[in-house]
Image (tube, rainbow, N blue to C red; front, side):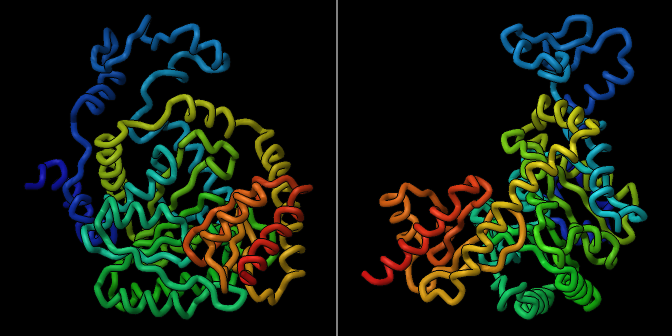
Length: 432
């Protein structure tokens, strides 16, 4: 039986793209008027005393051990150890929304939700699966793709993970994407995850490809299907070629059709080089959605957060607020972006000189942290093992035909040696 608070949210979302796409869990979930909600009211109105939250306080501020506080000298006790609100620090949420608009100018005049803080982008994707994927439903994604997608979809939700070949020649396989979208549209609902710059290939669409991808999505909605598109923007902004689209697809999908619900999954983890902060954001957009709809969606997500991890890390959020307010932030980021682009250029030059190699060939790549090899005549897993055992080089076998190399973690001076070893090991295996 669905709880009254869940039904109230379902009623608000009824008839919208979001409401039509909810999973069975998505329909059942709600944010309870329990400890957290009552505590928020007490924080606002309890001027005499707040006896709601299980924290030790002195003069209304969280206490902290000196052995902890000495390592966080620029944070006060509340910034360091107090609980964060379920949906995240409201100041951080507003700051991140402003940053999204700055980085995606096409969003300036469009309506979209306030970002919700989640404990990492992986958690964000898992929460979206909870919200929109029921058992045996299908999530579309590119092949190759990050292995964690399949783990979340298949193992946690007992749903189907359907992949389409990502590449055709030197670019995105628009024909394959169109075919799988058309086929899945016949079911009335389509759920698709697009990750750019992509892990593991390191590819982002060109401006023309981005337009075509969005047109394919729009046409599916025009034919009557409800479509939710999840834009995994973990590596956003790290583009190295002029023809590459610089904005997130979220910016174009935000108001593309009434039956399209777009979701942006992003955060500072890769963009701002704070991998261990485990802080990400979920942001929703859809043509015709109003503030009441975004509020209802947010409460659904808050229910999932509350019933899993309760809230994201407080010190990470506190540091992020200070970071985003720092006028030197972009200059600092530019320094590391230049470093990554130099590594990309060196890898690019090396593999371009090996075009037509009979054993391995690179998938198209133009952005992000990675590039991957398509292993044509050898096993990616056996090649990985050989590189590790004989050359002391660690790589990742995404599947039996895909070997991922993270040039982001290789010093520029070591790149030639690493890639020479990859090709040599592949050739040796092919000749055995």
